[in-house]
Image 1 (cartoon, rainbow, N blue to C red):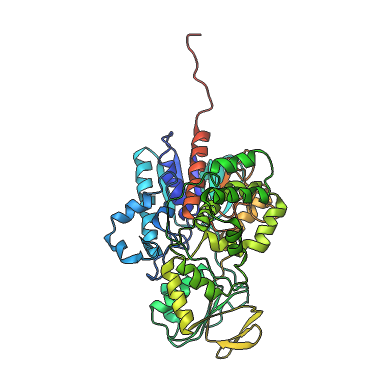
Image 2 (cartoon, rainbow, N blue to C red; image 1 turned 45 degrees about the vertical axis):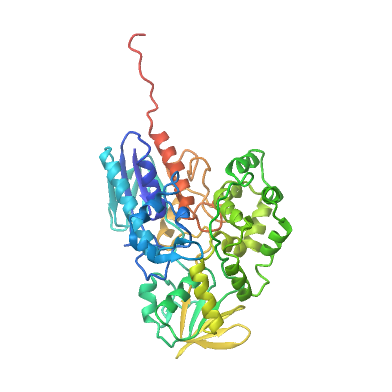
Length: 492
């Protein structure tokens, strides 16, 4: 079988690693990546040390069946100890170091595949078109043609959009990463306005603090919500918030949100924890003063209560199982009214960054403002309009693209898929995909990984989640590569 993989980020690394374990008849693999960030994607490029991963090592493995894979890799890196997060008691390393892990895992997988007889090549060019049919002919921006039997679309979530039309204005950065390129252009005394208050905004504030920035920093947030603060990992042994329970619900037809809540209630009841107190903490996300909330959550890093830890785990482990089966009215409610809370829970900031943020807030150097309606360029900087008008010298965009957004570099290819009927959009966003096979069309040659698929959750898929998807797809591709003929009995 000839496999084409479009995109060389975390999903591709997980897929190559999983394919190397299938033990099936070797074929051909061609990986296409138009950017220079091979295997690293947007998030794990070479950058300043302040830009760290957002989870402890056990939650960053790119090998689906081996949660300790990244931890063992770190043991061979004595410099990882320099990045100990005292709140978690574990190293939270720079994202660039995690990018090295991805690169080495990809290279190791390719070496294993080649040793087993696979022909593996990497094309540093963007796929922009294809000729439909069997086999599929992929065409790159540079004019080359590549014939494949199966195509995997794993292109990630794209880059930020310019919601205020400021692209090209001096002092405006629509794409903050890598901060090693962005922040040196910011004057030490400049007033920096950051659009957003999520993890990217936290990265920017931490990066500015690391380089000794002295000017004011303002986070512009529609909701006024900062990410939750991650708690120190404790052993979790759920009995209800487990894949088997989720699959049991799905097997009975559409799932209601009340049924999902019942699993959480049962889990907390077994632990002797109060569900009402737990729910009140979540419901207060958008109403409590964000600085008080940040301070309180930092104080609760070592809390023995397991509810929030369990929910964060459940969003990542059983959320992908339950999400496609939820009633549409429940999915709409979660997207429209609770998306910020769910995102903050599923991707909390590490205590190291939370302390930097609190120090900046307490000193008055960092402020959080809501209700922004307009940002315009003027001769000396930018005018920001909320409940008043004020000026900033620099504006950095920290709002990631919404879920199911096709990356700009892939828009023409996806348009061709839609035009030819090789793919279809779901009204609520994203490409339709078969749950079991990840095919874009029944019996089709195109498969999909990650957040461009409509049945993925609206939060960014984390590395272990992508690794799980990739392992299932690798098994599916191996199954499809098996010969369909039966041996002939010459004695009959």
